[in-house]
Length: 305
Image 1: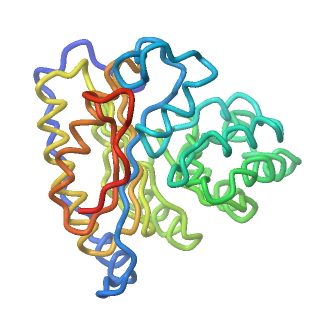
Image 2: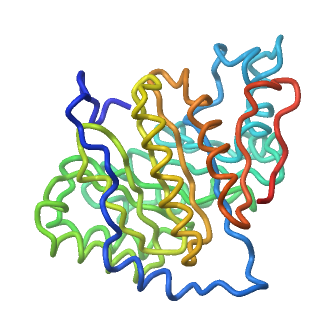
């Protein structure tokens, strides 16, 4: 992911911002009880067709048609970017569903012809077609996410509301235009709107745009897109801090978090995902699983801590 990348990160303050006040209100509406379903952390990358992973997280000799099946036994979610470019047909969606592990969740990126259109597709058939196609993933469908383009500013909030009224699947929203962040009222209005429609936020942790790491929760679920820097030492210290924040959120009522590790060319994403998995074993009652870099022939099954 090129968005927010910097050639030199030595002067970047990667500290996570404090929780916005609105988080406490959102999470207080989701109280934990002794019989409450344990929170769940989904850990994933951005693609499965990686020949460089063969012998590392895929068994030796794995062929491309087998990669999805092995991916879903190592990770339990994916940032599914292919849906940004075309709506998959029925047979493709059925194949994805049947190949994936039972506890796996796909997080499809909303079609570009929707997210980058002037009206976000509300006056055409694409939203309905997209939702109908992806609903074929059934229980293996996690939140979709819409990545609004850089030119989609705070003045277009009414357009976003019309889209939210029409989009029928679970959804998380990522905004990038600086007008959302330079004016606190703009971001508060966005947060209020997402809460109204029980829509999650996308939090992006990337070196060159610290404003998009806003830490605002608007539902009991959140998507985190974490952009690393070739396993620089700060990648690990940032994951350490994220582990603490996720533990806090889960303890306060967050039900699900989807955490996607980005590394250049996706090559080292499993290493960072495996580190996150190990660190989050300390979070009480958490259900999660992640890559087993030492056992590519088996993969690690769902673990409860």
